[in-house]
Image 1 (cartoon, rainbow, N blue to C red):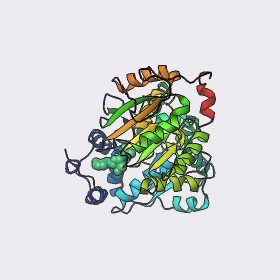
Image 2 (image 1 turned 30 degrees about the horizontal axis):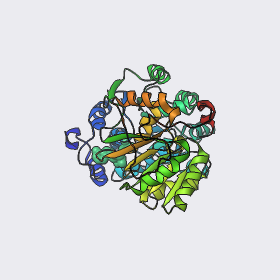
Image 3 (image 1 turned 90 degrees about the vertical axis):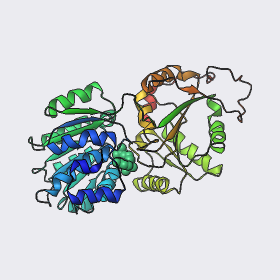
Amino acid sequence: MNFGNFNFHPLVAKGIATAGYEKPTPIQVGVIPHVVKGCDVMGLAQTGTGKTAAFVLPILQRLAAGNQGHIRSLIIAPTRELAEQIHQSIEILGRPSGVRCVAIYGGVGIHQQIQKLKRADIVVACPGRLLDHIRRHNIDLTQLEILVLDEADHMLDMGFIPDVKQILKHLPVNRQTLVFSATMPHEIRQLTKTFLNDPVTIKIGNTATADTVSHAFYPVAHHLKTALLLNLLENTNAESVLVFTRTKHRAKSLGKKLMTAGYQAASLQGNLSQSRRQASLDGFRDGKYKILVATDIAARGIDVTRISHVINYDIPSTPDTYIHRIGRTGRATRSGEAYTFITGEDTKMVSAISRAVGSNIEQRTLPTFNYGKTPHNFAYYSRQNKKPRQNKSAEKNR
Ligand code: AMP
């Protein structure tokens, strides 16, 4: 299968060539023909599979026919970073077609957005700011043809579903709807039953994470995590590393420690202003920062193609979160490594993650690291005299 099989309009084909894509990825092979035919689609695929182009290309194909200059397509994404990335993909793939795309999210001035909305063909938006524009009558969605909900499971996690339901009330009923999600929680299944019309479901891969990723657990005492990370970085030929922590505070302090240790590192967490977040992200994407330390929410949907290693400094609180974190490496055709530090508190999550990945994940120790008095033939180290973690309160700190 190659892109020629889709019979795209020459301007769309030119966009594909500009992006440098040679062959469609499996999600593109599965999704594109159905979208081009006009069907509603439920796409089950994680970030890194090429899902953005799977919906952007058929949208461009549809836009190539008919008039431009009014909003014909709306893409809703849970975070500003993801909205911005989709916007950038459209800018590249849609440049030859001359489509106008605007990204709409909070934390930046509203007036420029209002001007751009008047001329846009495609809107990529986060739910809160979009609803704001709808309520102020800044946006005309009466001629909308295609709606995309991207990372629907994240929208659920972030509490956006009520906003999405409100938005849907303002859209024409006669439209095509595409939903993408890495997982299918009950609430998303229910939601899609009500607003997708006889959808085709396309699922990519039966294991939960990309085949191109290799996984390892690193048992370690909690107080040795930073030392282990530094040792690991010293002994690993890592091109670009994304490190996950459970709290914003830890992301910030770990980022600083890495900088003090001489690494080009930055952190990405919710307490940063939008411009600082963008600077961290751009610096990581351009290679100015080799290491980015982030919380889950801040890192949602990050698309940096060169990420060679994802390191879970703190184990994620659900297997789904693990899959999302790991989805940042081994993207498209590259391979990647996923390392997770585990302590004695993490026993249950270690088993749940192994089940989700569908294989036993290797446990490794570093021969160059001084683990102290604790013997090496452990199951994994315990954090002494500490109560088990409360996931709910931890959630608030992200
Ligand atoms: P996504 O899953 O949409 O976040 O895409 C992951 C990465 O794969 C992005 O950097 C895309 O530019 C890239 N990509 C998408 N489709 C293709 C393709 N057919 N060939 C090569 N890379 C691709």
